[in-house]
Image (cartoon, rainbow, N blue to C red; front, top):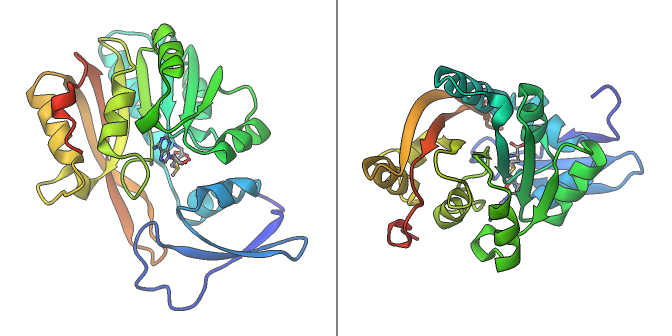
Length: 255
Ligand SMILES: C[S@@+](CC[C@H](N)C(=O)[O-])C[C@H]1O[C@@H](n2cnc3c(N)ncnc32)[C@H](O)[C@@H]1O
């Protein structure tokens, strides 16, 4: 961004700060000052360009581009067409993944996010990207919204930078997964430690049960740097692309 309407300073003593706990002091052009943490998305989305500045310019986030290109490769390797995909973008935020999906040539994208500020920022910064944008908590999806989404016969789910860290828990991931039609494409990223034996979040077990149970057929798994942490440490994630074979049964949703 050439001329941002804000200035970002980092408070002192932030060297021990963990992912998601990163702090910033934002000084707006009108002199207003706010101190925010990396996961205060409601505050971040209110300021145009701040999300892009913090995560994409400062911390070199590459995930929307990586997930979309991995999805395109997997779809094309299966002799299918990206232009046939009708996508549900989960944890859609201010629309960066939706924008990338449309550039890749998908047919349409519907967004869902838990906070109103995400929908408002999308409308302000990327109008027209989503055919529809639902502001809902996936753990408490109203029956009428669920019906509207299912009626769209969506054949792809994307979920980028939104698993764990107090964002989307395993059972919300499962709820979203079950909204996608059979044989639909599933594309998401997850911090590598949440997909390892050390994991305590429930994601690793859930994904393992899904693959062992033939519910998800993983087509590609790429280890890559999602972004840098405030102290410069690379945050390593997996980009996982697969095809859905069945719904996740309630008994498999561990928490
Ligand atoms: C880091 S942002 C990622 C946004 C976008 N996917 C991207 O890559 O730029 C995480 C998003 O997940 C949303 N989120 C958190 N919990 C959620 C839930 N239970 N249901 C839907 N969205 C949720 C947050 O509001 C936030 O917009």
